[in-house]
Length: 174
Length: 224
Image (cartoon, rainbow over all chains, first blue to last red; front, side):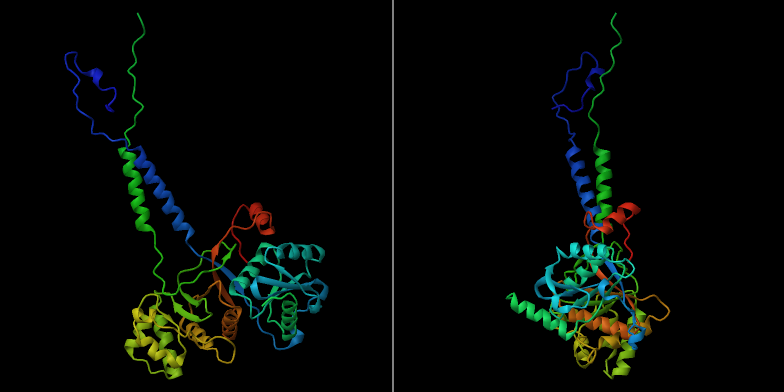
């Protein structure tokens, strides 16, 4: 194989073409491989950076009168239960809670948001002791995704936890 | 006469130079890549749409492992702060640590605390290799009554006075909510109202409100 192409026409007429094989190697595949690896390294370096989600905690207020008042009708409460289940209810009627999951919760929140005056709309998040850390972070993230301006993470009350327990028992969740 | 014969140029290009450049860049990226240090605690973080990169300086990292045990570490560059923290707690809690035991927390990279004050002496007695094989009890932070995290955060706050302290919480997917609740209680007690949760990034779901805002702004920042 002669890859030194086009060089021999300069040689004199009496010079016979030697049978010497060229030492040149086609480097194209090697360059391809090099750039492929470069792209890989570029991507892995930027992707592996963990991100941080900022959270601001509210100050605990001793006097209940100083607490923010919210309209009952504008509130939706999401309670995080066992096995990635979310129990939600509107207003203050905890006994009417309905179970849902993380896929459907977006539509529920957006639906509630559309029906409510934006300046009153509040989402109350109540993770129960059965909820995982992942559930908690996911639901906080969901608030960012849905553009919920006001949301609060509140400890679950024993009454509400009891409602969850009853619902779980009724649905046969162990 | 026919026209002058143009010398036919070869289409083969010499790839050597390009190959050189490619591999030079490759070696640069390999060397510049900071590989994740072998973490003593393996934690699978949840994902979020947040695009803010987690800070690396002046970090107080609270780790929750998959069993809900809580650990505390301070970024390696902050040696004076680490020293001040451990000294202050040694005095106030009467632990009686030797200098060597303190150095085990202060000087060893990626050192973390994972024991209550009562067991801290024997915990810090061990070197990192020994610690890896030991079942660590974690810092008690379950509720407000026995929450040693309050003391640790208070010590960190004093040590980082005048500097911006970044409190990071890195939790495992499988850990339960009460561990996080305990940490939130400890932070609230110390008036540390801001903290950051370490997550792995995912893009905002297509069609959601956040996605639309990001498209409109043409930026991917999602400060919340």
